[in-house]
Length: 287
Image (tube, rainbow, N blue to C red; front, side, top):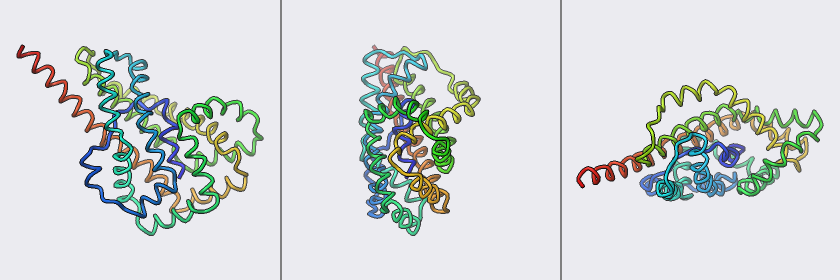
């Protein structure tokens, strides 16, 4: 499941305040087949990395968006997001979304690939690079590694990126995440200047094609490095799966599910931050 790379692959861009609520985590019933799919794909473990990723994104968002926050506000933001991004909650919401998109026969067919020799090896690599330190190493090494590859190998990696159809979906996630986190910082910081979120989204939408191209380029370098131990035949085998009917649906559903999980969670976090701010302002007005 190549979508499982999205969470760490986009850590430099993750400007998010997306959480799965406790209610969702409690109401979502265990689904053994889906749980196995998430474990075998590496997605189960990868949910651990979202929590640290969003905390890093808070600091980056404040700098890039020039929305300063006091140390107390930053601490509050991180407290809310750390609890909201609890791995078990994220897993529950992802399970719910994937369960609504993939039929049981499709889940079994996907698992068949994930349990194959190639599927197991790719999952092992995906899980390795879902660790932030390992991801950062890969990101630094990728450009030089790419320069050393033969043109045919690069074409295979580019074909892999295209087969996943991930760049457009990832661009949507990046845009939604950035707008959401900037909104959250504004809600959490009473002294923050108002942000025109509509104007911000229009600006980012206008730059979407450039963002897609950047993501595609970065994916090519990262995949080339991450999967460097895989043979050309391995990449061809994966490409065949990714372009099969179930492979196409699987990756499209996974990207859509991730976006929905984040958007739903961003609303929950935003309401909590807004509620806290209203309480603070109400107390101030009565004093």
